[in-house]
Length: 371
Image 1 (tube, rainbow, N blue to C red):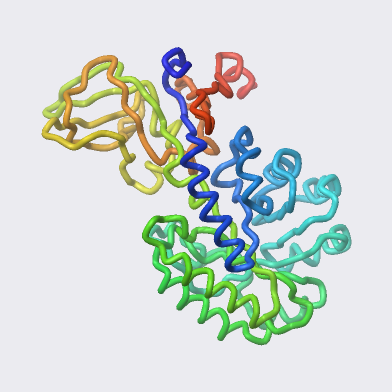
Image 2: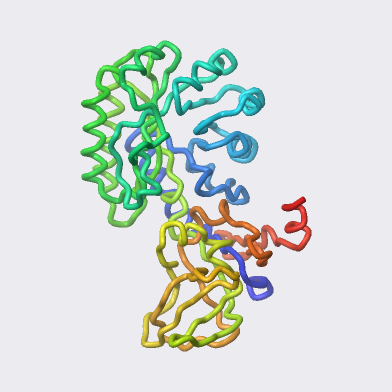
């Protein structure tokens, strides 16, 4: 079946996904934390049937994501938005109560009477964070993400029963995670001890499914925090769920030379792996290293549509297959129709080895995306 699927396509390996999910299940059991899939990172609902067996629900950044999680994933649905519109708040009644988290006190006060049947939380900006990229740093200077004033939280404490501290981005350093959590405890000790506070979300961005991550220490830290303040801990991983579980499979269409050899594939960084451009990093590639140097580039007209520069064992030719790895997080959720470049299909390799084409995009999808 795989040989009949035309490139480009995203290939999701359920066995690799399962490896991450079993680590998540271990964390849930050992720490007592509940773990939610962050749909902003990965929302390919065709594999929710597997993911939902090992997780407690979903967390969202908009009404549409929340409804997708509610309809296709089930279990708990946490609803967050940097700013809700009145229309979205009116639509939330479809989701039957779950948890809603406000980014500001003004939004909480504005919509409280309409959502008080939900469990309500607020996002707090603790002023500390871990991120290698300023663009993704939740506590960057002038950040709009979360409530900064500790004093103001006390005025609305009777309206909430949960807190969210989202202050990590690709944090694979347990010591840093632990130190920052200690700082949060010191700063918000009195609020955490409020009897009304029943749950605390520590957000996502913690790379605890990495092979070298000290997962037992992580679980111990979470359990101690939960017990100390008598709260339910929530984690909201995205990349940690889908780490190394997907490839973007492409074909070389042409090879040109401009001092260096440049292989052009039938996909696009701009359209299909946008985060590479945003964060200015190279795509990971599945191949053995060698002495054959190539720039591998996308087929859009953007001059900087480049996957990266590589030293390959084998020479490339027109028709060569190139597999970009770790292609699940922030790819399918950000794909777009720039240049009208063919949208990669979505393909799943089942646990029994069967290859299944989930979605094949055609001209009509491009047409309907416009107006």
